[in-house]
Image (cartoon, rainbow, N blue to C red; front, side, top):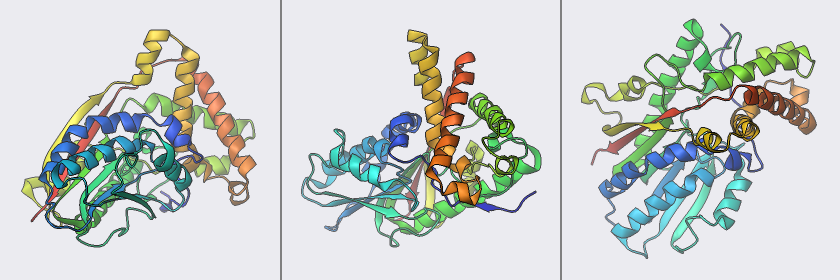
Length: 359
């Protein structure tokens, strides 16, 4: 088994691509909004200092607008219109922050449009590190971001993603995911104020460790082998491709709180597993447009996963915009062709965990 491979490149495709094509996390976050409203009601808002809201894993901002607006509206009902609210959007230094700032400035759904006492800011730092002062955060939100690990623990022979692996490889990812989950929770617990709340939304997975996305990943895996055969990428580059995304089971998420345990004063307040129908498939059932379905699937895959795959290209080629673009274009087009020939739904599950900091 190979040594750990530190993630050093952007997880999401830039230039607003993730905002345009990654609708799934936004749909999943919508299911968590009732728990978000409940969380806001339980926060201690005594005092006059600014309320601090932290968005851990904001990416390019579009998917954060609805939950941040819901949080702000709930806080306004409690503290009135004049108290300052600071919103910190946190992501890796390589994140496309330009797109995030454009969303905050011009998107019609931006949460600052009608509230002059909301102050957004961005922090370019991994949430597997300290990002805000101890005891400063009233409410923390993280949606679909903590599925990404701090590092890739092993190569994935024959594939590129852990959900399509088993044996020692899957066990290595399970161990890394457990370690990262505890690290993430410990850091957030220290940053939360007493009676603060943390709400984390993650894609779900069955007890058997399977999801409904394996078909998409298997199609992409075949395309990668075709790219090797056609000389678009080298065999050595393909062998280094491993995505640092790992799906956790319900028992994995709840393990730190088993037996009513607390982690750094953090306790489990609620957990919800929700079915998320495939909106793209629902549209296909209405219009029977295979090309449109395949295009949306391929662009979703590209915006979320292609940058991580491209980071495995040779050092010289990673620095060449044209080379990375050619790789992405080839993968997208070939994946689209395969998906158009085998349309299938990708329904999924969403796991939402609400945590409270002791007073």
